[in-house]
Length: 265
Image (cartoon, rainbow, N blue to C red; front, side, top):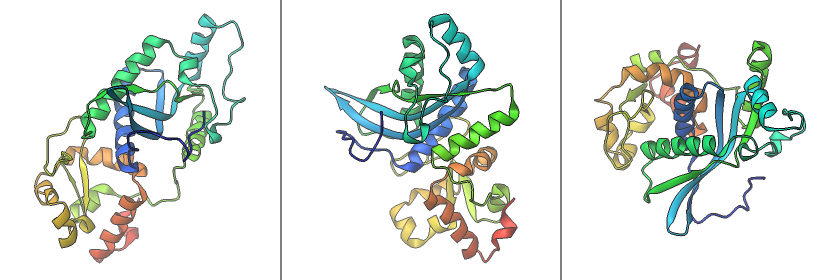
């Protein structure tokens, strides 16, 4: 299966910001629930319709422990374990999870995907289920740390994640009033309590200009509801920001009259 601009859906494609937030939440939840999951990388999330029910279609990659995968394969297959070598992951060609995981596991994962998405994103229609069975599965050898890091880097490159960005000191940016880590927006013009431990909003000085506040008045309420417990998670997940958020932070440092070098690590 290849995902390209010619694919047609009745619903809408999630934007990059929502998708990265959802990816982060899924990783935190499912890596604790299933010790054989290493990481989840989302390539696309689409709301679509089947008959009268709305569902989410997920494209992307689930990385799993290779040793665990080999044991499962040997118990259920008579052919040799395929590994990753025969597939072109850069062109989204690989073993699909429906070709490897049991139906019960896929249904369980699908339920987590659905509930996590619904808790984070205010969909206009009720989402009944998620189609994840055509996501790809990728195998990593967790017994070899060097090989693991190489595979993580390879996956990041496959998914188009840019490692040339600056890494910011989030706590210092907060201390100097350049960004605000707050309780999350509710998607309806207000602020709400976190739904999970990393659920928060990152508001920059550039988000607080009169023009921006006119469009998003909830931000004034949010900056008065700081969420300092979320700062470590923002520090860890900043590489998942879209280009717009990354540039907002840079512009906000300049608005404050600061030097970039003073806010990077």
